[in-house]
Amino acid sequence: MKNKYEIILYWSNEDNAYIAEVPELPGCMAHGQTQQIALKNISDAIELWIKTAKEFGDAIPEPKCHKLILA
Image 1 (cartoon, rainbow, N blue to C red):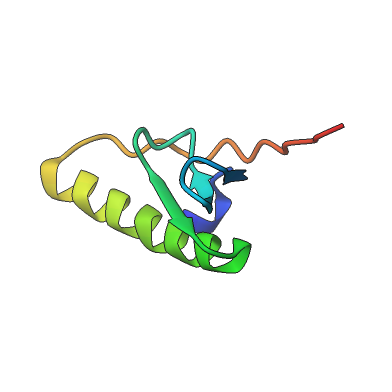
Image 2: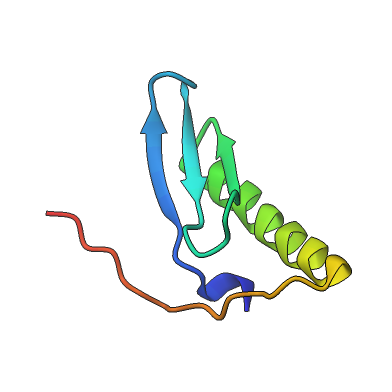
C-alpha cells in the first residue's frame, strides 16, 4: 500500500535539501540531499507512519492514487 500514496517532491532553499511530502498522511515528510535519497527516506517514513497508526489504532487512509501534473 505504501507505494500508492501521492508524493510531492520539491527543492527547499531554506533547508538546502529535497523535501518529500505525503498529503494523505498528515505530517508524513522526509528530506534528502538528492531526489533519490528523499524518495528513499519518504518510503521509510510512510512505513513508519502506517506502523505507528496501527499501533495506536488510528485510521489509515486509503491511497487516492491521484496524479500530479505540473505545467
